[in-house]
Structures are given as C-alpha cells and as structure tokens.
Image 1 (spheres, chains in turn blue, brown):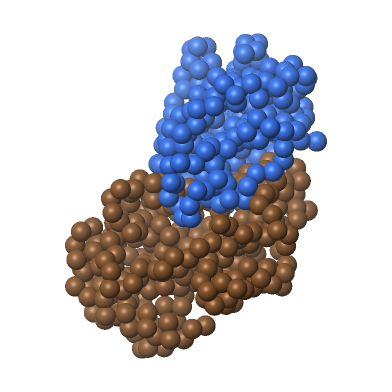
Image 2 (spheres, each protein chain N blue to C red):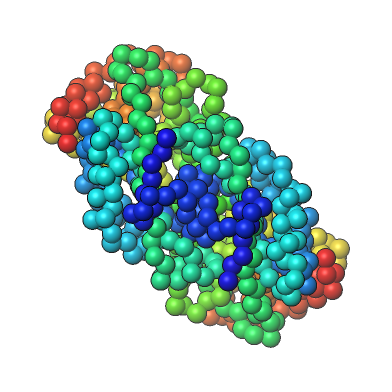
Length: 271
Length: 271
C-alpha cells in the first residue's frame, strides 16, 4: 500500500497537464528511512536543491517537504520515501517553461524489503542499452528514465540483480539504479559522471568514508575492460547501501573485503 | 481552456504512480485538426504503434483512441489534439516493468493559433544544449523531453522562433520541436535520425511529397557548417507545416522557393 502527499495534501492524483508527465520536467529522490528517521537527508535535499537550480525550477518549499517526509516515515520501522518535484502544471503549450509555473511536490511511502545481505549472491550483468551523453543533464536524478527502463526490461529473466550501463561513447558509467566502484590494488575507481549518470547519495557517502579510511578514490573515465581485471566490484544506492558483487557476467569475484569494510563503517555511523 | 479524456473519461488527473510521470515511460503525438478532421491521422497512429512496440507497451485500444480524437476535434474549426500513451500505473517499484501494467491514454485538446505565414519572418537559432545519442530511443516521440525543455528555456529572450540542436557527437539533428531540411543545389538534405531526434510526421510527408515532385531527398549525417552554405532552410512539424526560415543566426536566407512549392503541394492535398 502506498501513502502519498501531493503538495502537502493526502492524495493520489496529479493533473495530466503537469510538466513532470508531459516532458519528465522534474527530479526525484529515493530516501531510506529506519525507525522513522530518513538517512542522509541533508545530502538528498542538497542534491535536490542543486538539481532544481540547474533546471531553473523555482522551488523553495524545503521546510514543508522535510515535514512531509518526516510525517510519512514517522511510525515505520523501515520504509522508502520517494520525493518527486516537478516544474508544475504547464501554464502554456510547448517545451519552454513560462516561468510562472508552481512546482508540484509528491512524497510517497513504499515498502523497503530487507536488502540482500552480504552473505548472499549478487549477480551483475551488462546492458546493451547505452546512456546518451549530455553534460546539461549529467549527474541529475531527473525524471527522464527511459534508458534505465529499457535496460531493466531487456535483462528480465537473466537472473541478474543489476545491470551495468555504458555511455554511448563506450565508457562504463553506472548500474541502472546504482553507482559502481571497482577495486584495483586496494584503491577505489568509480566512473566520472560529467557526461551522463546520476550522482548518487550513497556514492558520495562511500567516497567520503573511503577517504576518511585512507583508501584512495579515483574518479575517472573507466573502460568496461577494467571490470575483468577488478579484484572487487561493488554497487551503491541508498536502498542496498554498499552491495558487494559476487558474480559479474558469470565470473565469481575473488574478494569483497574492501566493500565489507566500507559497509561496516557506514552502517556504524547511522546518520 | 483544455478539454481532456483520460482512458475515455472526461477528467484532468492521473495517478502520481503512473510510470509516465515516474520515468517518462510513454509516448505522445500532437495532431493538427481542421474542421473537425485530424490531419495525417494514419501516420500519427502508425508512428505511435511502432513506438509502443519498441517500448514493449501492450497497448491495443487504437479504436477507442481514434474515437476520442474525433470526439474532441469534432466541432472545432482548428485545434491541436495531444495524445499521450504511458505504460500505466506502476504495479511494483523500480524501473523494470512488471508486464501487467494497464496503459494510460490521455487525449487533450488545445488551441491552435494561426501558424506563421510564409510572408512573415522566421528566425532560427542554435542551442548549446545537445541531444544525447541513443539508438534505442532514436526516432521515438517519447516523454523524456528535458533536453528540449532546456534548449527552449535557455534561448528565451533571443527572439528566435525555433532553435536547432546538435547531437552530442556534433551533428545537426533537428529543431527542439521540429525537423529540419536544408536545400542545396535544388536537392533536399535532412539529418539521419538513427542516433537521436524524433521522426516527425511532417518530415515524412515532406519527404514523400518531394520524391513525388522529383526533388531528390538525401537523409544523411549533416554537419552544422552546412547551414552556412544552404540556399534555403526550412523546418517542419504538423503545427507549422512547412515553415521557411528567413534568418538563421541573423543571416538572411536568400530563398524559400522549394519550401513554398512543397508547402503549396502539401496544403492542396488536404489529407
């Protein structure tokens, strides 16, 4: 059962004329909540704020948004809160915003089933669907997600828990719903996201935690061939946390020790 | 005033859980109607059918859709009908479709103000916002339109009627809401859309009409530099029809004769 607040009011519907539906003109956040408390909330809100600024959406109701997240998460042992902020109902036809739209905020609560434990298998594959390169959209968690939908749809039935995606220019970028890290010589490598991909909150937490643990992190262009040499691969998002990959395209990964050390340190911090 | 039918019922709202809003998981058509009659309807429906097939959306209510378009266009001298078909309300969390969603269809009527006449100026500019390359989405009129939104937003106030967009790889693709044709040595050139861009209904009509008029049409990779050499540039969509460009980035185009000849022939056909 989903519970939702739309512009602060209990409800399920939005106008079909909302630019979020018409054009995907908006952003979202998926927030993990434990014992009523949203984890990494300031990072989520900060990413949302930066994204809205880049899209030129004049949203200022952060206090209301935060209260709504708290209200929905309140009595839950464990849940996911999804926040969508769109530019709002179109006030005229066409792609160009008029500038006088009123942003729409949608806050909904979803079940968060137990994440895969570190002791279970996690199979990672690779999608043939690529990510188009566009610096104007890179990093944003925006509502244009057909690439991810197709990647997920086309790997159905393969038994993978997640699929990696390359950019149209052949570089490794991320999973369809996660960021990816490779371990090589006890250092972390994660793809540069200046052309495409989403700057995940958990990616940021991992990078910060690694640095504090004196593990070097290299953010750079990554070729898919490097996946074959990696001693360890892990993916990250706020739902799974740090998720060690046990098998990449069928190959068993020899190690998960750095992922597990980071996971332990992050879990202990309990933000 | 907008009038809309949602799954055949008068209404204005859709569930916020619709995948059209959540991910832009759907397609749209904008149909020009004159004297109650939708123009190029079979081409619109055929493109929609092909697109839904590519996205794996199991939509079959074409008869109902056609009746709804006719009902909304019925008593209007001149209007635009926008059709949106999404994969429907999400039946589970995440990008991957469950396969048991019921598609949502939204048919809405909008004012169609008089198109710019051929005797008025039409200024064309060029956007710095690029189109990401993705063969899986190329050609489709899907709901992921943030690139076009940003292109339109960022050229506000420049006095342009439309902006051209290049692919991330530097090729000319289209306008933000139109296709583009260049005239060179009395032959037509229009960009190949296998990497990005929308295969417009009016583009198809123009190509067909040109061929029947023994005007050669070359569909190929086009470099932006070719715009400087073109004797004529015109853009196409079903609202503007064939629209001669009088000025490209301030330069007056010397001719519009082929565009006007095609326009006359297409208008005379009155489909």
